[in-house]
Length: 240
Image 1 (tube, rainbow, N blue to C red):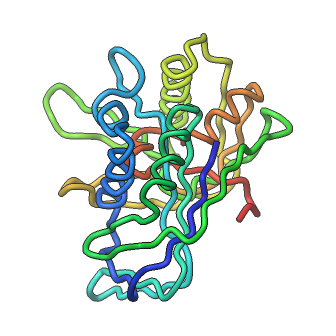
Image 2: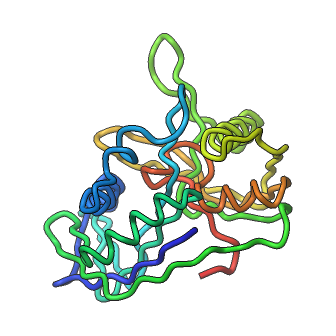
Image 3: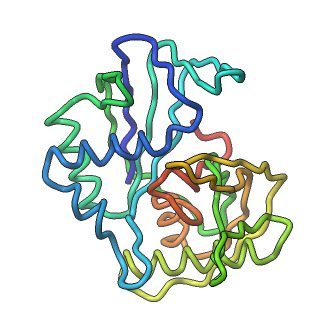
């Protein structure tokens, strides 16, 4: 399920280009208003790997980028989409919107002037998805450091599939359907700073072949790691 918010800042909003952490914190703050922050922040799904079970888009709207100062400025309405395959999350987030119809990002109050609840249904498990925020696949060797896989490596797609299967089993509570991914176009490398750590991922198009239920699950939960930090958010090409 998906909730699309239309936000109106009290003044022009100028924020750093890397705002994932602050936006994630704003979402948790909203959930806290209805007493639901602890589960989604601290727990989530799964016993070994913990999956938070939601994802969110970049902020969109009319904007300009200051490359020298590494900031982005939004002039008027700003749009945010939050998704989850878990009804409890969507229910809590919707109630938080009704209870506190604003979101605070950095030092700016963003009034929620529109909110629409949707449940996007696909027609097939064979679909092309575009990752519009970076899809992340990585490993952390025992000797330290983090290695980020790229679409030039088969392991990148293998790890994305494995991650999807683990998330599905943790959230849905059933064995994951078979899943395959392959490139459906070119990819762009993106490096995002999150709480002082640089995270590398790739935007681009993926051809997905799986069950309808798994395809809709990934649409709602995101592809790859760190979905609840703003990574791996998917769209169908041409979707707005």
